[in-house]
Image (cartoon, rainbow, N blue to C red; front, side, top):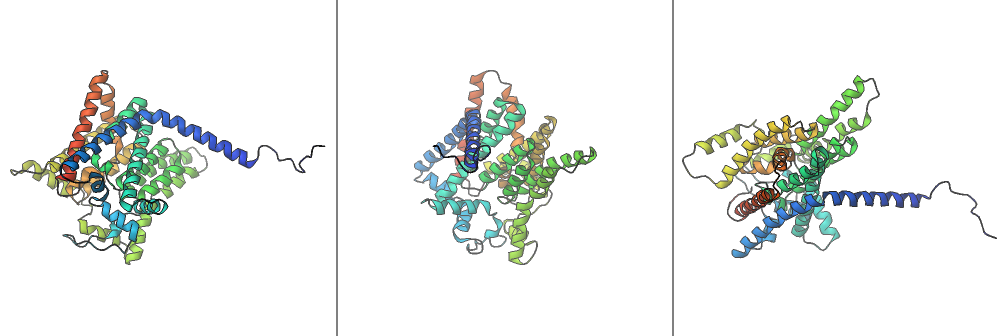
Length: 405
């Protein structure tokens, strides 16, 4: 006789259901990866060109390029925070006061610490690995947004262009911009797709990664609010998902600022710490003064200053074109808020182009122009030339220019 179970479970067992869900998720991931593959390969190609130029440049001068990329400028601060924790990192003398670890947001150091703990990697290698992986995730997100809005060709071009912007060398550094951009781009993607809860969560994570997380919060909140307004106007119940996005989006940024205030004993402690870098919002006075002085100077100027000024002016023009292009609210708001923060900050002028790395919507008008090119050879030549010029300029920033980009 065959034994029968005492209780027959209705439907499939939980383990079977979970396995099926995992299988569907894996299938979807592979499908989307295949769809994004041309963009990721093109982006990776631009960065390989840039890194090879840096390696060759370093070899010529007896410098280990990869070690330099993993430890240069602010990279050391992130790694010391990961290793020692806030408050234990030694102060570094600066022209306006000591540089403190509390100026740096915690998500990137936390990721470095976790990877260094879980693997035999040194802190600088872990930092570089996270940054490079995050840059690919960010490029994938840019492709996903552009392809959703304008088609696959536009998505590929947008990701490729991001790998060839003037300061693309930062995409090869152990810097927090890459993790931040990955969070911010996918937050915008989720907002465009009206997946409000995940958009709010990703915006909050971006706010834990960099101070420009404020721009991501503005983008998600600005895109979610009309959903709430429409829901009330139509007489329907309040839509809890966009409402939750509005609440979640600024939590990371506000939470870290509040934590620094609690540790330091004053609400504006974070902003006081930033004064060592002369970082405060002056509504663009410093930026305007720097550009006017640059244009009117009779003395030689650094190439970096001229490039940053050109990037800022071009970004203002592209911002206007982006509005005319009728990009979705989340994309436009991210670009606009990031541009306002970059123009309005009084800190080092040469850092402004780096602040704009996350404003990928400014690349969409350029990608649209290139997408009209029918001759593939011409298009390939333009993209290769852009990657080479960006790579050479990156070498100049890493090996010649004395300050951080």
